[in-house]
Structure formats: structure tokens, C-alpha cells
Length: 259
Image (cartoon, rainbow, N blue to C red; front, side, top):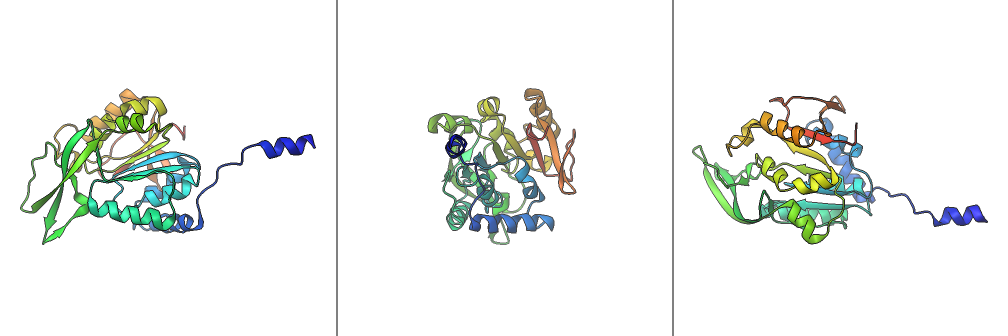
């Protein structure tokens, strides 16, 4: 009787998401095998666990939000952020479709300080290229294409966490077309507090538009400030430690969870 009572009082282990989230996760996971989705999606389960609080910055069309919803499960929270109206509505629909309940979606940009800005989306052959939308601050737009600007509020991750009382964040993915260093700058207090795993797009061809840092400089800054992180890339179905930024690689994982 004592053993039974003790067992029943223990908390149930956290679990992954519902069947709709499992289907979505399977679709993106499978697409990652054929480069129809970013291959790093296949390695999320090694750094994201049931019950985690995670953040998808630059949620775009939900490529990470949907798998994260499944991996964090009913007790986890997924916060999706994208300042582009089209992306916001698509991700909001997908969250409802798969039944994401924990966390929220916000149409806002994250940066180094709170304020106002705009998203610049190039128009090529009359079509908006949403995937190349970027914060316009400090950018000298080049090329013959037309640019469409959409106003957006800007918040910092640190201010949001403090204001909303968000507790431990375990994972942050950031894909914001070269504005990644500014997002990380605005999250420095959270990184100091929680050491979340960071999946960052780091490419010179994107960073150059802001003229503030190179990919190598950004990498050195991260490893100097938080030397307990190890940097990985997804190679042949596994997270592989690396100490260099390479032109052919887009995404880099900084984590203490695999060490």
C-alpha cells in the first residue's frame, strides 16, 4: 500500500504533442531529408524536450513552429514571432490547425532595443519575396527591384521576458535575414540567465546589408562572451561540432545540451 501511494503521488512525465502535431512534425522531419525543409529540423529533438519553453524568431511559414509544438508537448510553450502580416497569419493558422496551446504568436520584430521600424520586402517581377524580408534599420537597399515597407514595432527578448514573467527558455531559433546579431544583443540577459540552445542563421551575404559585423566576427563574439557553448552544424544526420563558419552552411547550433 505504501509503495502504491508513493507511486501515484509522483508527477507524470512530460509528453510530446497530439496526433495533429505529430503528423506536422513527421511531414517537416521527412521534408528535411530531401532539403524541402531545412535539415536542422531533424535534429531538434536532441535539444528540445517535452515541457520546454522555446522561441521561434522569424517564424515565416511555420517550418520550426510546428515541429516545436510537437516536441514541447502539452506542458511546453512555443512563442512564434514574425513582423510580416502574411507570415503572421499563416503561422497563426498553423498553430490553430495543429492545436498549439502553450505560448503565443506576435506580429513584432525583435532587436537590440524597443522602438519602431519597418520590414523591407523586395518586389521582383511584381511579386513580393517574403523570404527576403528584413528590418530596414541602417540598410542601404541596392539593386533594381522595388522595395515595399511595412511598419512594425520592435521589442527586445529581454524586455519581453521581464514584462511577461517568462521563466526558463530552453531554445531560441533566429532567422531574420542578417539581423541576428541585433536579436542576440537584445537577448543577452536571457542568455546569461538560461543558456538556451541557439539555432542561428549566420551568413555573410545577409549580414553585409547591415555593415556591422561579419559572420566570423559574430561567431567570435558569441564564443568569447559565452565560452561554455559548443557550436554544431547538422551533417549526415547528426549534430557535428565545428569551430568555423563556412559559406555553404546557413544554420549553426550553439548549445550546452550536447556536451
